[in-house]
Image (cartoon, rainbow, N blue to C red; front, side, top):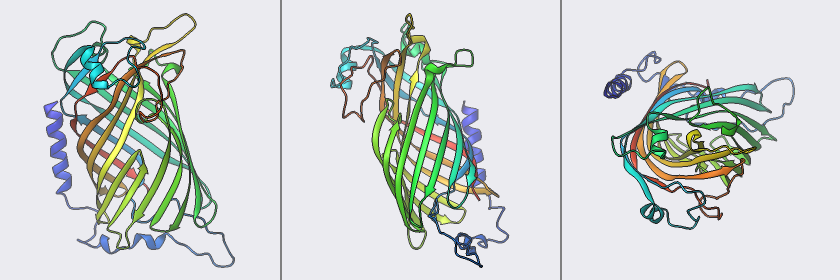
Length: 377
């Protein structure tokens, strides 16, 4: 593991201090106004104009991204597993203190990240994209007491996986108004190819309606069904993208999922600073007890806040690399038993009364992420 970290850091310093090979002369690329190519007028007749899907100055749209992420060591505390034992309104730390089963330190959490988002149809009046994603979280615990049949035994030396497909539709109605739709299906849990099944499948969706008043501002409001904080949630969402007049800074936000301040150093270097919510509902096969005619799932409701700074730079052509550094903050790591696929609804911890089957907490952890992307022209 030390060799992997050293190799990544060496590659980072090599890339950040290597001159951009695309520039014919130093500073020449910065003189090109790429946005001048964004508007085309056709002679010989009138054409209807539609709101562009992007605004100027945004960070590059990524078609394919391959990355690696790792969290540094942190503490964990797991309660006993007892179906319907912990009331929804019971304080989590108090519940863990009174029913503590396992505690210790997790030395390694990390793994591969892959994302692809490919245009299928792209016209000025309609855009359809299809994509796929994969996220791995491998665990290595420190050598402390092992509870037979506990959660640590299920996770230590193994990985939680999220793999899914998604589709996005963008439909502009005129020069300023548009609609954005997205649907996603993910399989999340400790599965492998031998036990992969529909019991790991979860669905998400979002719909937004918005305006693009000019080429530096885009906003939209809508509704989303999401697992970003572990359990399923139905929440209002706000899309807000803005670029300043001098095009040096801006905001890229999809609240409450993420929000970033953007600073453009030049055409090929930029910095993002902000936060992102990340999570899923992970089925743990070894703690799920099938009943006659039913499927009982033990699911970790994992949700985390990642506060970070990210540096992006063009590597060569349409390939960019990026490095993230920040802290992972635990939002939720509690667990539920779901009988026959019946879900529970807790809207960001505000609405709902279903009891938990397990209460857990994770200490904050510094983390880093390194990736290379093929971006949109």
